[in-house]
Image 1 (cartoon, rainbow, N blue to C red):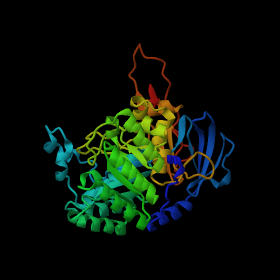
Image 2: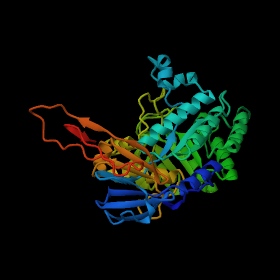
Image 3: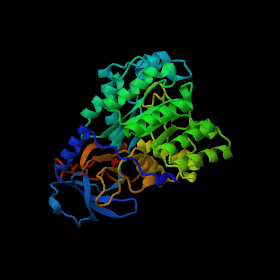
Image 4: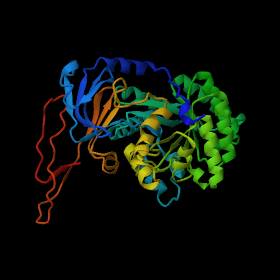
Length: 452
């Protein structure tokens, strides 16, 4: 069975998500005009009730269908919105807090114990990190959150509070990541994992290779996932083919939706062993999330999984951000388009496939509905100034983000050059896109200004 043959398990919406969906359905419709698609067409797109209602040639939709707000996307490329499949909001944005402790250390994770985990602090960081990623275009987020290790469920509860605060702006799913699970030493972890499900964790995760019995760890997580109808998302370096073979066999037996990552250790395997491992993962329908922008605290190996090898075997490969300005990656950006750019520039992945890794493949690995710029699909969209996908991945400065049919984030960048006899005849800044709250508004460009 190929990776594409296993359908993602759709989880019933939480009460919070249900209220957000009903609120979006009541929102006024929105008309996106003059948007360029990746196939070269220029179209109008009408959104209503959180979905794409109609797509037509530019100018064909006009103001029919009750669209009271409109945005002119002339000069923008319209894409399905990215999603972030691997974030760590409980440690995000803590690099400055731990910089003194990590100064001179070869390995940042040694200072993780110094990260403040108070509920209010974690909620603030999780909210700020989610908004940062939303501004880059990610309208859905899978947040890996540590439980236990002296903090109990505090960080998870904080992230769930952030999810409620972000309702209507972005969709956030929390992954409970326990410590030890097997044997007598894992009794508290097992109890906490059950409590995490009751508290609201959407996904069950963990770090099996840090447990004395990695296979037993996976068995416990899978059993609880099947019992409660939850997907599984596990951390692994992927450098042990025997462990991955056993994990794939267990996942196939229980028919659970399983994702693993970042699997950077796969590149250390010989070609034949790596191919056999990839074939086993594909046959079991196991998704792999790689981290082109850097590792995370739960993964020791630096680098990126062998994306082309995995894709050739039929494994669905998504790309995530991992650490975001914490001790493991103090310069993380949380930008899905940067992850796609790195896949294309460093790993030789074609630009369409690279963008798919942060959009269609990421959404599928997260169990989210497919998004296309076609009538009937969810209105989860990203408009980026540019004409072609390759250029957008290179210089994606100005962006407009649509979640559940409304504009939720906007970034506008203008580059200016000083006057010079050697200056080229550069294009002037184009008219600003119309804002839903100010239809037909425009803004003149300044001397030498180029909208990026």
